[in-house]
Amino acid sequence: MFDWKQEPHRRYNPLTRKWVLVSPQRTARPWQGQIEPDDAARAAEYDPECYLCPGNARAGGVSNPNYTATFVFDNDFATLQAGTALDRFEQDGLLIAETEPGICRVVCFSPRHDLTIAGMELADLRRVVDTWVEQWGELGRHPVINYVQIFENRGAMMGASNPHPHCQIWAGHSLPNEVALEQASQKAWREERGRCLLCEYAKLERAAGSRVVEQNESFLTVVPFWAVWPFETLVIARRHMAAIDGLTSAERDGLADILKRTAARYDRLFQVSFPYSFGFHQRPSDGEGHDEWHLHAHFYPPLLRSAKVRKFLVGYEMLATPQRDLTPEAAAERLRGV
Ligand code: H2U
Ligand code: ZN
Image: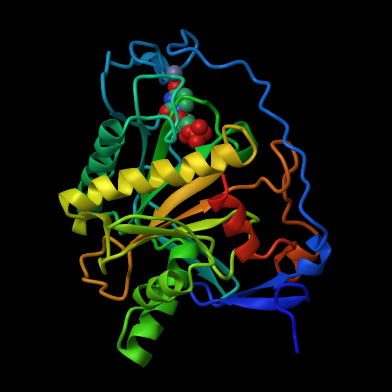
């Protein structure tokens, strides 16, 4: 009899159709990771040096208004530009390039410099959700935009340039790699089985329970069966919808609630303001219905054993297949326990 909790195996990600190697025998010993509290000084509510705080100057001389809730502005160092002409270059099928028009924005979640999703009031987080819905709709209606990616890099370890709570939106002309992979899988599932991949997965996870971290009426957070990062989670809308504009008012509150509770568990796990990359995946804004899409979000946190010990995706993982020691079930249990 094979012991899936103790012996090496691989697991399949139906969203990307890629595999991950799981080696739980390496963590079979009881888990005794040290907890190193964050020694960073607590940030102030307002930082005169912060380019995101209300009233402060940004690069290029623009000053932020004295905003009191959320605040959105065009990224001063935008990766993409709306005026880029559409063009394509190809040589012998080997050298292929395409122009990529787009729009990049920054969304400040709060005027308070010292808050995080975990620490914000639900009513204020609800305003952030409303801002995401508005921005997603507005940018998606722009004729050149076909996909709107909302994402947050949190913590210096993930390359965030500033602790002020904020996210970025990159809205572009093409379908990004990860989104294209997930779209192809969801479409194939829909065509072959006549059902929605993530509706079925959410149902299965709720029944199993072992990978569930948080749930409310509208959303479910699980450590996915195929997680690559030690404490990676997937936040799935309970009801089928292709994008964030399908959320009812109660579901928008539900999204604020599940994000706050999921982020708070991360912070408690290693007693640190947990770093992560977070973002939504949803239907493209290309004018089609895309009923194959099911709204969800990914948290990809880098931490492995403590506030200071992170996982690197290197070596075998760069050249062959990603690998993890801790099983997703064990990771979910630890997150449920804090
Ligand atoms: P990150 O913390 O995820 O790096 O996001 C901060 C963004 O803010 C980054 O994309 C932009 C950077 O280009 N930015 C401005 O638009 N104006 C500034 O004055 C500084 C930073
Ligand atoms: Zn600030």
